[in-house]
Amino acid sequence: MLPDGYSDVPAGKLAAVVTCLEMLAPPVPRADPEQPGITLERIEKPDVAWYRDLYGRIGTEWLWASRLALAESELAVILHHRDVEVHAVMKDGRGEGLLELDFRAAGVCELAFFGLTPAAIGNGTGRWLMNRAIARAWSRQGHPPIGGFWVHTCTLDSPQALGFYIRSGFTPVKRQIEIFDDPRLTGVLPETAAAHVPILKP
Image (cartoon, rainbow, N blue to C red; front, side):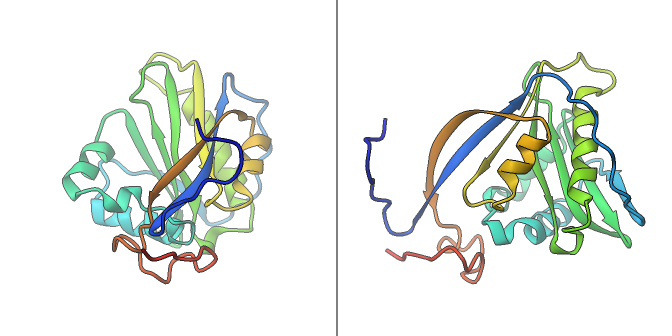
């Protein structure tokens, strides 16, 4: 338990407030924004380099680093697992969005990663993609139905993320503090990433 008041975060570390959200039943479907030229493609056993490129183009600004820090073999084990689904938002033949659903835990699905590159933001593509994420999570064929769909977001993510998840039908259920090495100092991300978050060097 952290005490009330301020707690120092060591130099070289980052701290984020993480909110966990869950959905216990499919919500009333929301209308799809028109998305001309946009498709969603299931990527079977994605190439690790391809995945890291898309993950980085989406998440560098928000200090996404966990998948970049994994060894290639470790990441491949996750991405190629039969109960992990990777989908790409395709625009002009290039991946511009990532939807990753993790069904490895019995009876639940985690919205493991969800995001768009700057090229796909601002035209309703996020709502379009979330509609498909919810439908896919609750109707996966060939497996027992899930009893819950969950996601977490943190204060390093886009400021719009938490409200977007709530509007999509998720309910906040838990709050945590995460402290971790700044990935810009470990070499996982360039020091120029997320300029809005200052680096405190040890």
